[in-house]
Image (cartoon, rainbow, N blue to C red):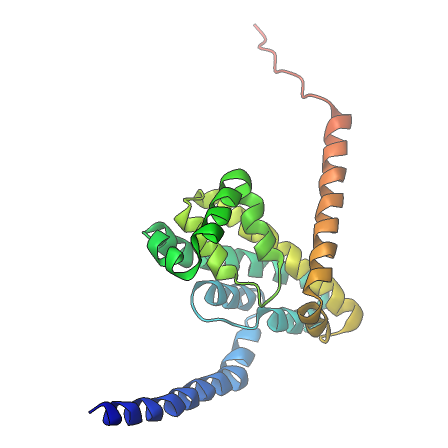
Length: 225
């Protein structure tokens, strides 16, 4: 009986690989070109699918959109970021519904406590920074953890949106300069891209803060009798 079960398992392995290879081929040759034709809505739909259930090569898809329609690259980035924020609600909800035990089975207690402290102290950055990083960053693990540690929904979606917007904004600029091959540059230089992204974010924050200080406090509204 054990021998028969072993033979069945051995047969199932290649069959599953063939099944997934068949669907990946269909995805690349049929579904992906159809979605790309949807324009902005397609970018949002693919990002929602990628964040919620089925992993999709989002960087490559964004690169195709931007290369074909460079004048509207910012619109594609915004729609994809919005779709990713919405799609992330599914793994977030699974984590919030009782994923603590599941998470503890996947990571040791020390790493679990580090994640919890990170979300307690800087929950926005704890979710925004992983959202900026390209694969193989375990993004869904951070989303799941955000649900486990009960990060509020609105800050969660805002953090994902901002992180994804920065990530695909930087990618789009590289595509406009280097062509679609910029996807490989991002994939092989993730640390450099992270430093670049954080540098741009820091410059933007300093600029916003300096403008706010120069503007001074807003005058209080006076009630006229």
